Length: 473
Image (cartoon, rainbow, N blue to C red; front, side, top):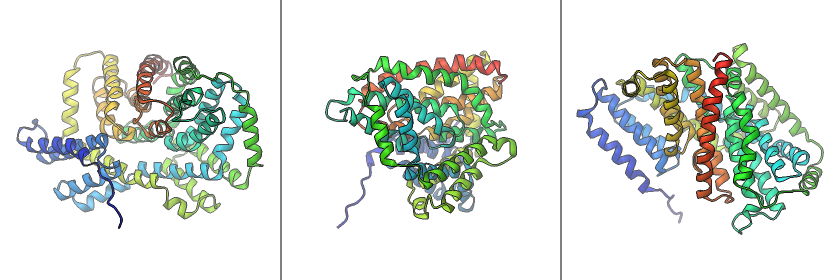
């Protein structure tokens, strides 16, 4: 007899209590918010809290919320189905398919081994080479989880065990702890550099466009280039000093990588075809804003090519659970967030409240406050994308209303949505995957991330802000 699936019923307590209390307080809701708008806000806030308490995976929470807004009559079924017409979740889903191609063909592993062979004589060099791997595949890999967990982490684990550093036996700090934690921040930095490097970035760009601010691929890159480059050069060294590995020299890394490459043999036809598709995708994404080609269409095209060439099978596509999870839960959250803007003026009221609190302040001080609130509120989120959906658009409109240059505000908040993944071990997919490897303790993770978080805020906020002024953004 099969057992029932485990449900964390305790995780429902806080979201249900908060949602029910808000519902019951409808009579004393702020002026300007309709009854339907207030009820939708109650369900939406309960959903966001449930994403933190995790009674079910986020897709389960989203489906339950979706059913609630239908049962309560807040949205009609026919209209509610338009939630799945948003292009952003579909782009992310197709990116997961592309990432599967990297893993399946072995191209990602080959690229990693080449860098280890060339840059891996010292542990610090290994840290930089692995960070460079993440950086190079980032522009065409919106799934930063697949990039970090599917391509880089397997190499880190193989390398660590080669040097006698295993999770759970007291040898973690020989080399594994440093490499795992360094990859976490390398992924954060690469995610900040490219618009197409993580799902929250894509979500932010979509929400910005919905509010009349159109950010091109190159505009994002140019804005993030200087602080991102500084972070890429400095952060691995900071971690090396703050969290030093016991093994400083890695003389066997080159030989190990060469042996692994020898075992792999010559580049297979599947790898060559995957590389061609990767380059086509990257070029089209880079040119999409110039030639009027939709970025989601590029992602679908890439997957179609992977199917036509036999790199992926239809079973591969159907079994990519992460992709279909995104299509369901992200579509629902985007839909609910968008309805808050049109039903009852909830978002408008929130904007007025925050705007009143910071009214009369210097525009740059307003921007600084918004960035700080946006960054540190991520401690209460287990999903970067959910955080973007909940707070990006309201903060963008507040900044615009207080005289902050709108393109500057849109990109600065977008980049903040990338660097706030540096906060906790549950902040994003890469954090969860890397922390689960067992090489870094939670207390160490939080302490070091807090310090590096301050560094990112100064680097991207101050130096990045000055750089954006220089280039006219």
